[in-house]
Length: 210
Image (cartoon, rainbow, N blue to C red; front, side):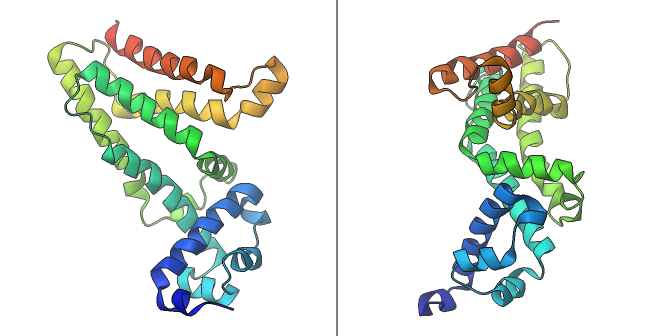
């Protein structure tokens, strides 16, 4: 039975549903996740979930949007304007590294949505906002780097975002297969600082050499 507090706070109810939905979709995929199970874990009802989100598909899209928006929010909150271009770009790379490591459900959701060829993400009304913040910040840092002469290799913000994301995403998404084949745990705490430094060095070296 829903508590009186929950009934009086629809915003909290919606947030609770989203949090559980993200976990369930990340664990079971779109097809495997069950709205009944999400309802049970939020102590609400299937009818209430449909009231807030319309359908399972719309709930899944909302879960994707929330997972991406958390990443974009972290990027927008980091202050790199006071840093030189080299330090700033390293900081942005480290931010992605830290976020991917601390949000495994995000990695799983991205992997699942790629299996679906971004079919559901393409239906998001917030699609244009999901990548813009990251690119805008990166573009500003690149512009400063080129103006000062610190960066020598010409790349776009999308190019750099891809490079950083590839390293961070692979480390989390392929940790089990990579570890089984090569016997290396990519998320071993003893290796964390080494890989974080490696990513920063990779990006900085690429930008500062011809």
